[in-house]
Image (tube, rainbow, N blue to C red; front, top):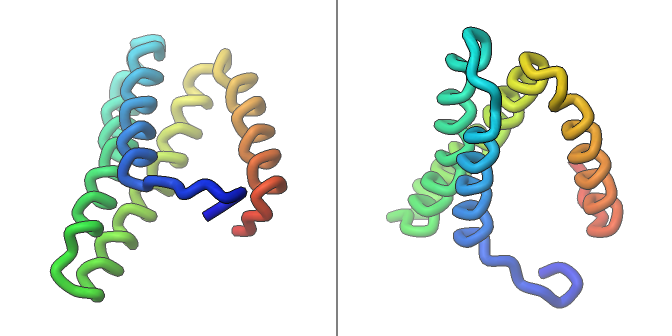
Length: 113
């Protein structure tokens, strides 16, 4: 709980996957981005799928394993997003804006890596 608000991770990861799809639809399609976009979508939508599996885990070890996969998929999503941003220079400014938002949220929520 943060600031008295409970976060529903099932809903948040689902919405994240939807946002990945919506964002991917806006990307320019060319020989460079065409192989990157499906990888980005697969990783981004897999976060919620793996979290959902973790929520229905059969054991504590199964839960830890599936949460670990969700974490890896989230990290992979960042990797593909970085490549997409490199392939689309106009996204550089958006990336800077998103980084500023993440830093601001992290500072307010006192989140540390």
